Length: 152
Image (cartoon, rainbow, N blue to C red):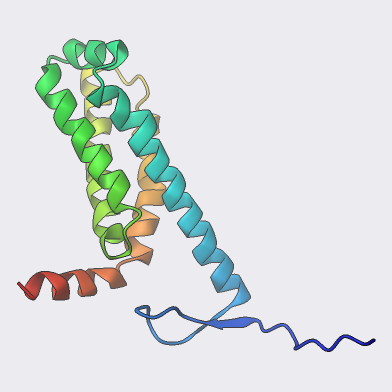
């Protein structure tokens, strides 16, 4: 018995709602890799960063007390990080979420340099790089978001 198979295609059409056209295998791989980075960042912001703040973990409380901001700022930043983490996973919000989280990281870098003597100042800078890449790559969704917001 012989097997008849169709030749493997190196192109794939975009899912409904995305820009029209075809993607090569390399472009599809880049899209999958970018999506994996988004998921990892969402997990990081949701679990490793927001959760300790929202649960008032002693290390988070001590950090915010040390810089003189208190629990109100800790809960606010935790909520913003959690909202950004969830929004990174929603296609129409991905670019806006990445931009907002990058802006939050600029603030975190500034606080690290000024109030914490530069301890862990590299972490926010490192996180800005993939966030900027996501914001730029997913920027086409901004048009759809504006269209949805204008519908009200």
